[in-house]
Image (cartoon, rainbow, N blue to C red; front, side, top):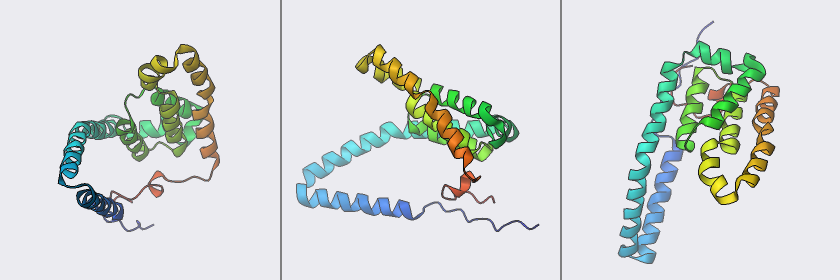
Length: 188
């Protein structure tokens, strides 16, 4: 059986150019409608935001890269693959609950797990648990703002969600993760 042709690696796809065009158009609109003062003040704030977020993005990418190197693919496939059953969804859900930080951390982790052999059910359970049951958000935001009673009720009511999501997506026909995302590597 012959290998399918490798996909070419693209550094920039069409979405990059769309966002660049929107940024240039937005900047030009601010410059012409609001003047140079507002334009440069906005540019300064944007640069500050970029400098604050860049280390977090780099850290998230490193975490994803380290996971893909430190955890062998056969281990990921065995514990989080399609054949892992309820155990895989449970492990992914617990990992999602304890993963700190925002999408800058969790999405590189999902990408690393996906390329290592985790199936979409475990990945969806991970993301659902991270977004609905994440301990960092509960401790930092929910308890201080909403109180313990509300947080506890919301947490308990949300516990089934990652399991439901993981189970339901596993009932669908099998899909490869790379079919869901734009190709960034040239491996078949």
